[in-house]
Image (cartoon, rainbow, N blue to C red; front, side, top):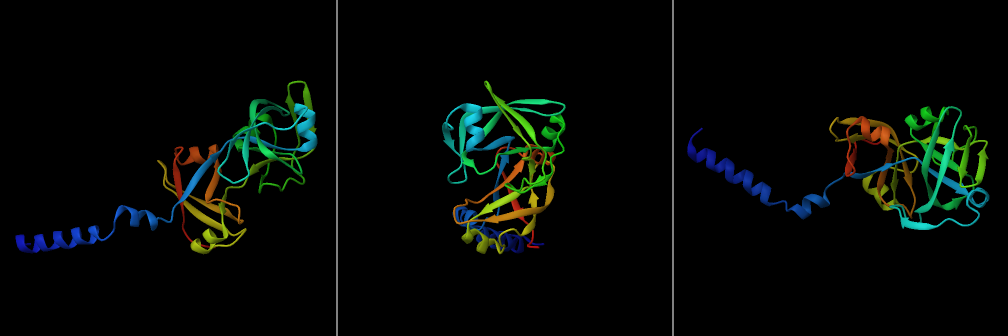
Amino acid sequence: MDQSSLEDIIKKVMGQMAEVTPEESASRDDSIPVELSGRHAHLCEADIEALFGGPLTHVKELSQPGQYLCKERVRLIGPSGVIDNVAVLGPARSRSQIELSLTDARILGVKAPVRQSGDVTGTPGIILTAGTGLVGLEEGVIVAARHIHMSPADAVAFGVCDNQRVPVYMDGERPAVFKDVIVRVHENFRLAMHIDFDEANSCGLGRKAYGTIMSAT
């Protein structure tokens, strides 16, 4: 290849690169922010009263509108283990629910199924304590199914619908594809994919991570 041809190729490539500014490149990004969800409790009003003797104390807003971290913490007591200092999230739910990782469930000795949030019928129970308060849940312990929160506009942009399951590529230190990620669409949702720490560690994700929907299924 002579010098003239090489210069022409370089000019062409540089021209193509100049056509896309950093701002334009970001606007074309189809990645989804990934948030790591640690073990936590959602409590009903009766259980909040039994454990703390009063309402929950708001500490800070979470990424999903209307959801917040509380000052209060609980201890989980399972058949074969205990986990302390478990976060409580507000607001109050109609039914109490404990969300764990599979590792947490093994520590506690609980056979927690993978379920969508709110689907607690037939799940294992657990004992909760806080100070002098004690609550025995007959059911409510789950491993939350990985999912993506989306607004209706986001769903249109990604070409998906509520409760659809999609594969998502995770570009971590050990890249992986997560299958059966549940799409959850609501007008109040903000775009974010939620996975637990077991899942994040499996592909070497850090605190700032992104996933990409590979295809709609």
